[in-house]
Length: 223
Ligand code: G3P
Image 1 (cartoon, protein in one colour):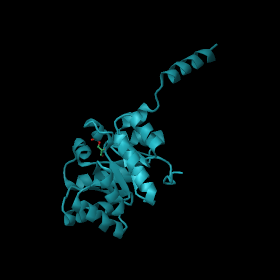
Image 2: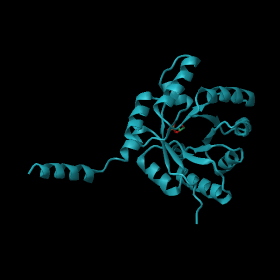
Image 3: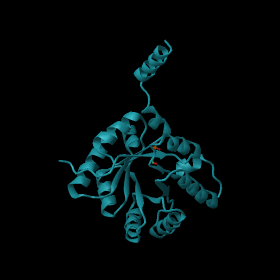
Image 4: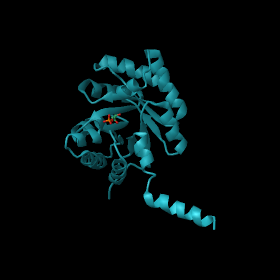
C-alpha cells in the first residue's frame, strides 16, 4: 500500500502574469503560483523594488503559496536574498536551485522555518538530496526531460517511490508541465502539485462530446 502524502493534488500556475493568475484564480481551482527569473523577465518589470512589489501583488490575488526564485548562487547571497523574499509575505516560498550552495541554503532556511522550493531538479538523486535538506517542495522539470528524450514522468514515479519509502514530507511539485496529459499522468503517479501554464489547465475542460452534447441539450430545451 502506497503511503501518499495525505493532501489533495494542488494546481499551481506557472507564470508571473497577473491577468493569467487572476483568470486561473477565478476558475476556483488554483492553489498557488510558481515564478522563475525567465517568467518574471517576460513581464518586463523594471527595478528591484518593482520586482519585489510584483511578488506581493501575486500574493494578493491567490491565497496559496507563491514561489519566488533567488538569483544568487553562493550560500551567503542565497540566504540574504531568500530572507528578504520570505519577509515580503507569508505566502512566499523561496525557490532555490539544486546546486551545492543551494542545498546548504535549503538546510539553513529549513532551520529558520523558511519554506523552500528546490528547483531545476532532473534526477532522483537530486530529489533525495532536496528532501534530506528539508525542502518544502521539490520541482522536477518533466517537460525539459521529455525535450531531451528522457521520460519526465518516470522521474515523478521514482521520486514518489523514494519519498514514500521513508516518509519524506517534501512535496513533489511537477514543473515544466506542457499539456493536459502531463497533468493527468502526474495525478495518476501521485505528484502533490502540478505547476502549469494556464493553457494546460483550461485544456482539461475541453472535450468535443461535451460541446456537442451541450449544443443538443440547448437545442432540445427550445422545443
Ligand atoms: O518554473 C519552472 C518550470 O516550470 C519551467 O518550465 O516550460 O520553462 O520548461 P519550462
